[in-house]
Image (cartoon, rainbow, N blue to C red; front, side, top):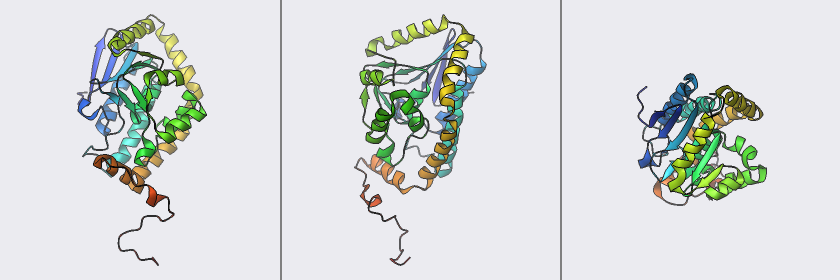
Length: 274
């Protein structure tokens, strides 16, 4: 298919998929998720592909998650987008080819969840990892909450998901979010080395290893289904995401106090006895 939000290139048995929205720090919209899914499914069906590299265009970001300023992202599109993410996760985990995340700059929110679904991560020194959910009134329920404890441990996962701090490339390596950190100007050569090593291995052996390794986390799919529904309901009907996203767009601190005082927001004009 003709792509609008991504670029797909081939070099021998290596396929590189680049999220190409640098003006939005490679934040994804529904169109981006659909195109990523198509590209990963194409790679799965192409027996000549031996390794896949996922990266983001430009120097500032791998991906900063969902594009909250996308004008085409209405309520219906948001619900559909969450269910499209399920297909993307399956296309990445079940395609039998090792996927390397090449990370430079921000890898935040849904971008970090994309990173976790990749099999391996090579980070440049400029990389910054983290989540965003509670900052904008939601939670990372597409692999984030489910898979994070398996990657970094239970206590660290709660720190990452509750406090939504940013972590350096070296910190990401220490906690297991990345395999190696290198200077930015060595990032491409390091990715090349890892791809070459993978392509020197048996394709079927790699496929079997990936399937076997995935078996431990495959049981999370039921939790993922719940997560998609919860995200869809929260984003479409939840007042807290509306406040969080509005605050982000208006460059102000969100006001969460009214959601903690026990008084649920009421429709305009509702009286005390209603």
